[in-house]
Image (cartoon, rainbow, N blue to C red):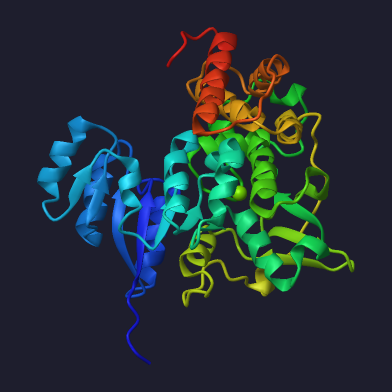
Length: 387
Ligand code: MG
């Protein structure tokens, strides 16, 4: 067997939960991957430490003030403030930026005809109509890093004609820290309560989204965009153990599921290695220690964000971008202690009620919908409006 050149990996958002776990996978798969670019927003010390270990040729920081300092610390790297500079040197780009800010990485990676390991669901959700045509650029491929979508991606490989054979997608949801609780019981929950996720250790934004089931709602839209399945054929089932990561039901009655212990390094490794599987196991199941797997329907009366996301997805056009932007503002307000947990869904619902989505023609229309969503949420919360 001849020596195979390592796959060149770029990570946008390298200091966060997905970014650091991507580096874990690269470390474990020594020789198979080479880190060629890293980008962070403001976690400069983490970035410098990572770059000293992995020696990437390109490094991106969030602002000019940090750039000079980072360039001094990393003389071997080209340091810039342009997030999309991570794409050029890479074979596969891991987009682990938090929120809508990840959109340029998604667009540039697909435009360049490269593999996108997508952990930034907001970019696909907000900009679905703009991202869709870029997926036919030769070489451009999206491999989802979200555990549910990675599971579905794997399950779909058992079909020769998914367009004809898939009856429905079933996304599993852990239910988050407040599963089983009613509205009255949730009036006084704190930020710390919402951040105590039972099965996954993630960043604060996605953890709050898990507590409201907005994360699952965003994942429904993400599944629609990724796999081209209609909303009536995407179901959500609560599965507290987070061992079954999602399922595909076929026309013949078969359900194919992907199971593993909750460990994001598995979907990250899947996206890095695709179409091959990596050699290092993450999250393999010890069946002797696995007691039971439970499934139940979601409580959309209490966790209304799930229903709001379905409605935005069905409305289509700019509605998902608007809703996701609004959610980002309200979640920030909750994390800052400015609004109670129940007001997250209430605010999004009331703001969405007075929004009329349009069909976006380009990225500018998406940016405008995002801006409007943020502004509307700020007005509703009594915040001064930000650009
Ligand atoms: Mg997920």
